[in-house]
Length: 50
Image: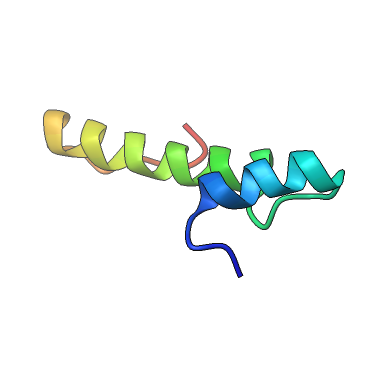
């Protein structure tokens, strides 16, 4: 197993395979982090998807 997602992505590109964490899953994670920051900034509950 790769030690991090960057190594896995490089391996996926070299080996012509899907990475362990694909773009769709990465986007969901980013959206969650953005919602956390926005909730803290506005002191409101955020609904997903943004």
